[in-house]
Length: 449
Image (cartoon, rainbow, N blue to C red; front, side):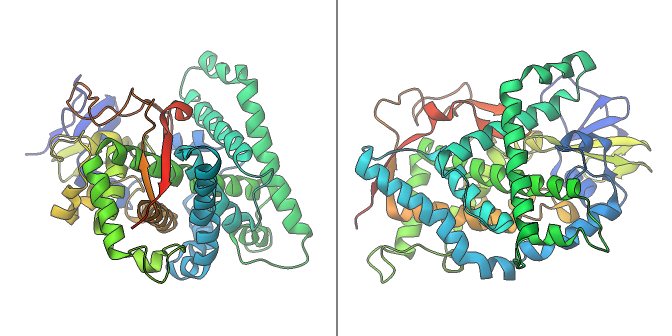
């Protein structure tokens, strides 16, 4: 018999929690797939907090017609055919740049690197070329650091908008962080200005936006800035931080690290003809199932977009999996974190166990880090390509270990649940390491067969 959702004080007590009179948080995977895939639910006004400029972007708009137009503009640039065409550039700006940085560290810094910064640099370099068609300004890590501070500021600003007005005023007391946002906006505006002055057209996303200033879209200059902001932020953070958490988890679970290394090295031994080169996604796809499982398990255990996804339900809805009725006008929140850590749906949900996805591949459909259905992130294909290529080449070409003086985390240091303790994280809109300078240090050494 169907029942109405009721509140509860437990952390993840059941598939539906009433969090306000007409707001419900859902954790059952089938319920989440239902609300994210149903035409009867729509974007909630909560998305307005993700307006990072004076104009809505594809992410923040609740105008379905405008969102559809922008998706049609972008979709061709995230298709498999386009990514295959751009793969040489993606390899050069991503894994090849990272490996050069790590090899240099091996010569000059006793092999110590900060892998969080390395992943941010590689990902930003890829997005800078795919979106803006240009090299990173100001060279390297300096740019990556202030961009990371800018996105942190924007995330905090977004969340503070949910608080009462006096508390939201706290954002005005962050001038140091706000200057990074101003700098990031200037970076985007300079790229747009250079493109408008360029005498030739480029086959990239920025050109698509500039072209959109003409009929039929008639985007304003502020519209172009808003969409470029979204592409920059959405293209960097999810990929860079999922890579960071995946490597961190492999270091905490050395048995899985050895298995992933063995898979890549046995499939693509270094003594083959491409020694010294890098493995492409075309070569890797379908041949590294355990590595793919490692990425999915990281997306489950630490979903970088750690927010609840809100949908409005104007006509009410019967939630089939939980047999619950929600009234018309309700707001339904897809509780991604709660769903991914539910003991009802996952065996030992706090343990990093990639094997679960090999034992039952259907479990991938219960991982919602990229959304679901028509609300699936259009950049998922690019993100999975980058993560697979970067991790596979690292595992094949390097032996990695924690520094000897890093003793506060490791396989033997367990939390109250008896699993290896994760490094501290900040969870605002995305899950990031709280102290990457301390916790993301890594010793790298070229692997020899």
